[in-house]
Image (tube, rainbow, N blue to C red; front, side, top):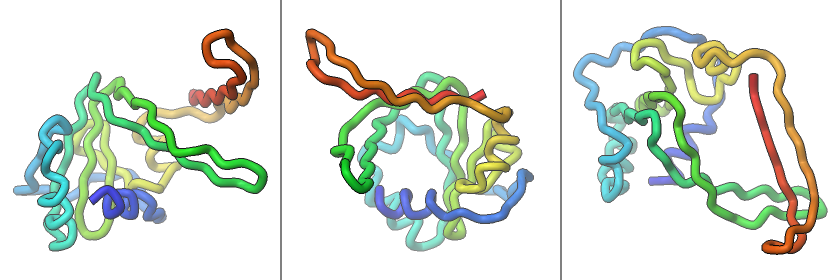
Length: 146
């Protein structure tokens, strides 16, 4: 299931921001998904659309792995906390994202997603190194967007 959703999320396209025809599409709360991985995976395989509503304050694990020449970030786990409601529409081999459940952008269309969520231009990417008494040597990464 995770691989199917991840694969769909990586689909980049040249879509724009706009409405989707979602009549009779079931909506599930993020908190309802635990234990439904198999049934949701089957739903995706059959091409049956559904919407997941993520409420402000919901948290999900974030697993990051990066492999580049000279170093590998070992799989680790952090937590992502959503500061606003977000809707995810799975269907027709694509994933769409919305802030209001009415206007959608295709996942992977970063310009459309930035416009949809009101992200401006610019931001920062910082990498730092240090040593702490508790952890010893540490590498820190911070990403911000405007």
